Length: 260
Image (cartoon, rainbow, N blue to C red; front, side, top):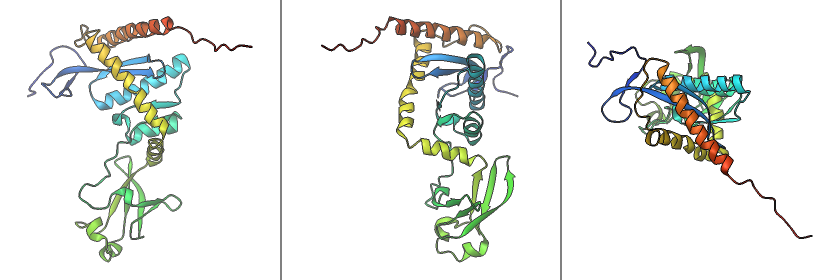
């Protein structure tokens, strides 16, 4: 028997994301132009990461279809840095992902992590710190991962075994089939443009703060799957009008004058 039941017909998600008492909630997702702070699209979803990532794809495709606009770069937090999402952004949409990679391969017990191994793309193998080869059968696990394994004799005679796989007969490394897209995101994360995107991404936090504190949209009045979309869209229109008023009221740049 569930502990809490929502009696209304709703797609709200039971969440404790606010680190307080859990409640039923929706998530408001914005796609904004970071240069001017204008909201390009809005999508209401359940307050769960998978739904929010799907909303990002929906808004990007809808903006391109309706306005013919496709961003050169996309800035977001680590929740959007999964391998499948990065592959969609890089390979299918051709957008530069200024997104931290969601990576759990780092080991905390002092043994070698995946980053200590070298990937040989030409031969599709990993090279360990002792210069031994880890190969794969090519079988995809869980729809996304490839397993690269070292041979048991190589690991048994290796001087690094205590620092590599002390509890296993041979070392195994998992590699995503979308690892190339992850490598693109990792390379971009080292650039100055990525740092600039992180600074500009704070503008969306300002919009959400304005939504809660000024517009007082902490509780929805409309119910059902379409009610939150209507309210979030109206709030985004109000925020855009406020932003456009500021842009129009700004004095145009004056051309520099010089004496002849």
